Length: 77
Image (spheres, rainbow, N blue to C red):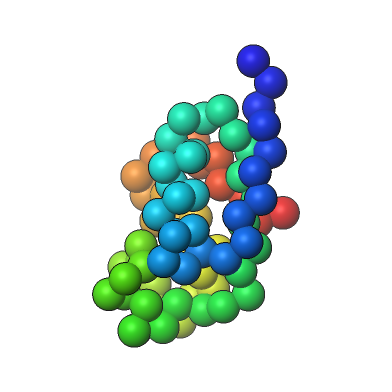
């Protein structure tokens, strides 16, 4: 089956939870766009960890995913 491409613009309250869920199916090539950095107030309602504060949201999300899975599907390109 051919993988479908999905573009997620913004990994805030919805995108930060949606991207990992879609990536678990391994049926999608996921492209994430978000220029923001993780701030401490994001931790309460977005899918980021405290150690991610100060990182770009895309990189923080990819890093947490790599910790949980050997073969990440997320990409920022």
